[in-house]
Amino acid sequence: MPLRKAHARVLLMNDPARRRASDLIRGFERVLVAFSGGIDSTLVLRLACQELGANAVAVTAVSPSLARRDLEASQDIAREIGATHELIKSGETEDSRYQRNDPQRCYFCKTNVYQSLIDFAGREGFPWILDGTNADDTGDHRPGLQAAREHGVRSPLQEAGIGKEEIRTWARELGLSNWNLPANACLSSRVPYGSEVTPEKLAQIEQAEAALHKLGFRELRVRHHDQVARIEVSRNELPLAVEHGEHITSAMREAGFLYATLDLAGFRSGSMNDGLKKK
Image (cartoon, rainbow, N blue to C red; front, side, top):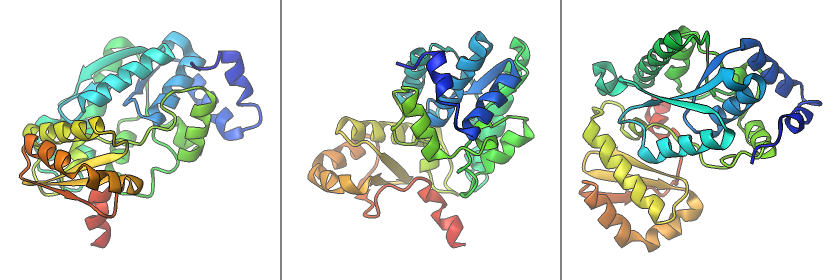
């Protein structure tokens, strides 16, 4: 369970970056937290509830690109923190610019999501929207960050100079149960650039990944290459994937893929960006 507020304060005393993040959040007075249930936005929500109490509300945008497993996890974490948690519908998967899936897809996704959050914030009287962007999120291809800045979304962890390692350390100290869970991303990130994003593909990916989770794999992606499911699991789980080859092949076929392949390089977050780096 999270530490009491007084105990949480002790953790800030000798860390200027932590104090800055908390001071930033406290200065906003009333906020919505764009909440995915991942550790970054979880820490922001935990701090916002600590500093602002009922004036901090979590909002999760729901669309076909959000796996049911991830939605349920976000609801569990919000309850754990004791935060008010709202669900809103976002329409990115209905946007033709998003569907065509060029390297700017994430920009159009976040443009839709943040506009939905802004509309909700306006109706409910919230002047600020916060997200979980951190100081390590500037190196890869991240057009969604541009959308966040254009929509006035603030990123207290990034602004305070706090990166992923420190986030996990702080979250562990605060007793957050997801402090060491693998990072995740929307289902559309499994579709190669240039291949259209459709609800059918997203449903295939969700079903395929759910099957792998049931087999005990912890860190994974199923990349959608038309008839081929390219499976990424952590390198230490590659032998387990070979051992379960028949079950995995059957599960991929049940999800609608004709072939199942195992990527010997293992899990790499953002591996669909490899082609962009090569160019």
